Image (cartoon, rainbow, N blue to C red; front, side, top):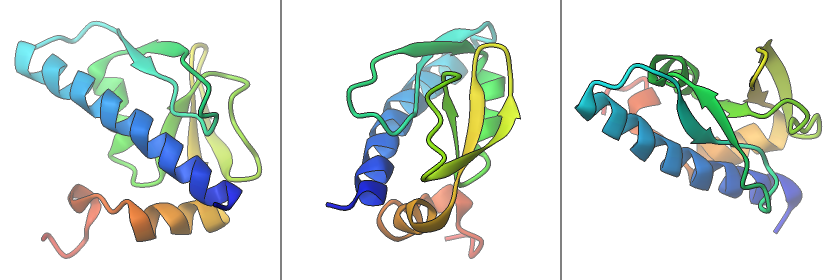
Length: 114
């Protein structure tokens, strides 16, 4: 498995966990910051970062963006598009971006409305 493919798969696992946290927060009306998992490409990372459900939703609304702890960004597969005190927002580039698009489509980002 190539690095970009492994990184994309790892990030999608963390994204899935974080989306369940976000959905529960939405059901319960939680607006205060919550501990979300770092969505970096390191499969060994178990660190958490704090952000509100609204902040998290703003990030995931951008198809190729993920939240990571500062210092966990990987310039080989992503670029930092936002720097906050507790987290960075990174956008996938190159083969990592293509891998997400091929293997991990998210219908809510599908422009066809399907």
